[in-house]
Length: 332
Image 1 (tube, rainbow, N blue to C red):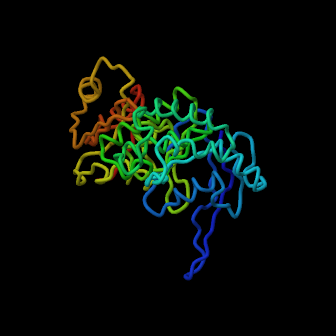
Image 2: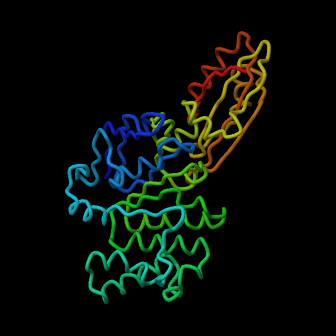
């Protein structure tokens, strides 16, 4: 659905040229809920604005549903943006319009007949769970309700892509969960590809199936969410997956430290630590452990201390071949 090739964006500042995006290459498949995550200043919002050409890249290409966005004329670009809609952190509703008329607004711009636009707007109010708010004004709504109206407005032109730029950052945790469930429902029922820009790993955990991690304008890690959460390799990914720092321990004389990660889809009839003792004669200590729910699946990790004796190599080989496990040797 979306393909970014060698995308580079620079900004001129008083202090010189800033490279906001550096040679970005990403493929977002039709039907994905794709997360783009990074700390503040990583280039996330610039990247999403390049997808719909609100920012024009200095180099590279952006293809959406087979169209090269950077080659389109102004008129063609306006038409293309009806297929690539966007929701924001601050909702951006028109305060002088009712909820119904806010949703109708993009259809008015597209010259949709008024009766047809109103009927579609009422359908979308049902979809987002606010059929009773048609005549209410944005000032009368909660933050979560405003975002639902913004989502309904974004869906008014039957888009193929929904861009979410920090769409839940202004909401409390319960409301965030409800909005993310709504986005999942839209993705599932309408088949819309969703791109989620966020600095919150919890958002990616809950709904995304793939993720790219940005750091200083560069993609440092990309792939399935579960794989990256199970075994982050870049420093930026580790900072996001382990915000308090990856579980560590002081170097233990006579021990090797091994971090193992597992996913909850596997069914095991024997626990790993007990198996290491029984099968390999390795008396393993658990120095740290963690579990989390990622896109409905339980993932976990453990930091193990293996005695550095004649059984260590046998134990590590056993871990390597244990189903559903990834591992790495770490320093204290």
